[in-house]
View 1 (cartoon, one colour):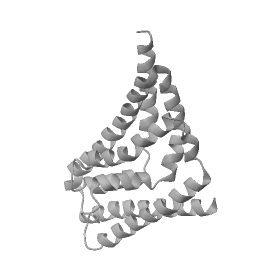
View 2 (cartoon, rainbow, N blue to C red):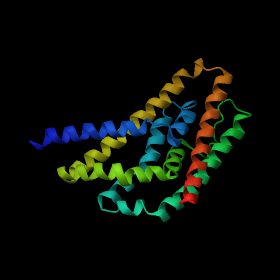
View 3 (cartoon, rainbow, N blue to C red):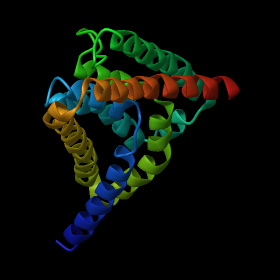
View 4 (cartoon, rainbow, N blue to C red):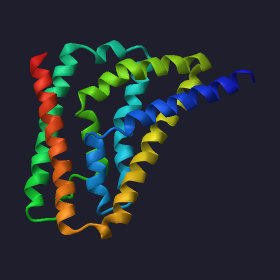
Length: 207
């Protein structure tokens, strides 16, 4: 029973660190904004796609494979392949923006898929988990395997509620946007995706 207050304190600190990371603009955030324009629940699906990459990754780190994620070969491979995918998505969104105020991606790129791709394409996502995330996972093991499960769920729920909040906010406020505003916002999101992709490729090559 004495361990419970400590577990609650640990989970609260983990939630704070998780939110401070997830609220930073990035590829997943940009995708959520675009998807939220047409679907209020898009953030939930983006978070589920994010979790498809994140949960197995947390298990691997729990099993002691964090060092594999920091290897130069791993980082370069993710940077080149993932960066290329993000550049493609960003340029495709810019191309479609010419004919659509939302610049939405084709239907085959659903919110679930977009969440998975933009997460797996980010080498710094893996680097965060190999460093800060690994430290949090090690901290959770003090409370046994249940502590790890509670931590994993707490972290992902922070992602879930944040991205759902973003998509709901975009969907509810879109009637206030002019056509010009829509084009600017989605143009910025498209450039954000392409820009991150180019940065990942450059970083992979320079390494």
